Length: 322
Image (cartoon, rainbow, N blue to C red; front, side):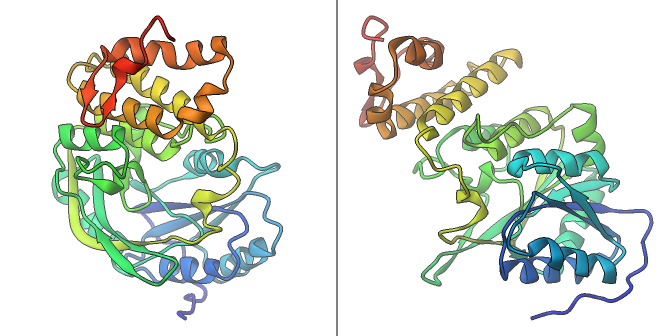
């Protein structure tokens, strides 16, 4: 295990602000913080947003903060969950770029140096990085970006991650990237509440990808997503409301594409997402009240023009049946 640098002076100007929502991370918080305070890019600030942890993780964060002046501690008065905590971090971030980390993941020690160098070379709005995924059985796989055109990224963030047509499996996540803070602020990009929308990361990225002028990728696996049963991505969101929140996300995507006058350009990706959603949550939808289902799904289905995509046939869900 690495040890934090003691008495690190505040470094100006701040090049990257890293926002870390913190709940009950357990022992994983040590590796997360160690791989942040020991980054080769020294001009960073680490914004730890304490989301009312109950397992003593807050004490660990406070101890690190006493030893490293670059750690900024924000305390939520009540639980705001991941999305709300990230928004609180954005309020106080001072870096030229902002990045995000889950409290139970870690990264290479030169991650932010490499992403920032890439960003500065072309004044990019967003720089992506490839990802290592560590599974519970110890198997580690690499997930790389294969199409970083705007069309490729937007298609990927709309389509399901597991879709065979998706060339960028990690497009829905934010923690492997950095975003120019002025770009985020000027466009008022924020995270939606994950208690309402299933994929708040994806919605943040969809808005960002649609509005960005320059996006690049550092083709190295610098961030490690540690997938485990009690990971932050699973915390208290997998419940009976998951199907409804997935539908809310689809409605959000449809509205965003229409407002940006690009629904036709990304319609195929939306068709795939709708078909997958209906196929995956058919039982849950069948139990919803008619008015509730019509309000959530009606507009999305009507906009889809009944696509037929492989084994999914949305003609089975006609307007009359709906």
